[in-house]
Structure formats: structure tokens, C-alpha cells
Image (cartoon, rainbow, N blue to C red):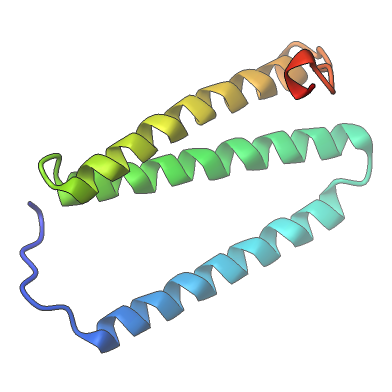
Length: 117
């Protein structure tokens, strides 16, 4: 294990929670402001939404990988996060393929598809 924590103080948890929520709030504000100012046409909107989706999914995947590394594979929490990492990796691959079809090849993906019925 990377960290040997014997006791976690309530103040530390509260402080880290406040920092996390503040960071998430600022990130949401940045994404919304970029979307409002940059996505003025449908083509720019498609580029922005696909890029933002891929970036956020891969950042979630990276944070989950760090969590699995810190928890270890032998603990039950580490196994739960490992399953989450597998799901996020598959979602990241699918979303990357979707973005490649729309942005790289210029093929508009059909919506609704057969899977939506």
C-alpha cells in the first residue's frame, strides 16, 4: 500500500470534501461557460460535446485507476473499484469510437438506433 493510515480525522475528511466540491463546481462552471461561448453553431457544438465527454471519462478512469492502486487488489474496496475501472474503460472506448465516427470520419451516428427501442 502507498499510504499507511491508522486514523483519519473528521476535520481532514470535511476539508477534503469541501475542496472536492469546490473543484467540481469550478469545473462545471468552466465547461458551461465554454459551451455557451464556443458552441455557437451545431458543428462547433458537436466538437465541444464529444471532446468534453472523452476528456471527462478518461479523467474519471485515471482517478479510478489511482484509487485501485492505493486500495490494492486484495481488499474488497479495491475489487469494487477495479470493476468500476473496467466499466469506465469500456465506456471510454465506446465514447472514443463515437467521437471518431462523428469528428474524424464525418459520419453522423444514427439516433435513435435499434438499441434504443
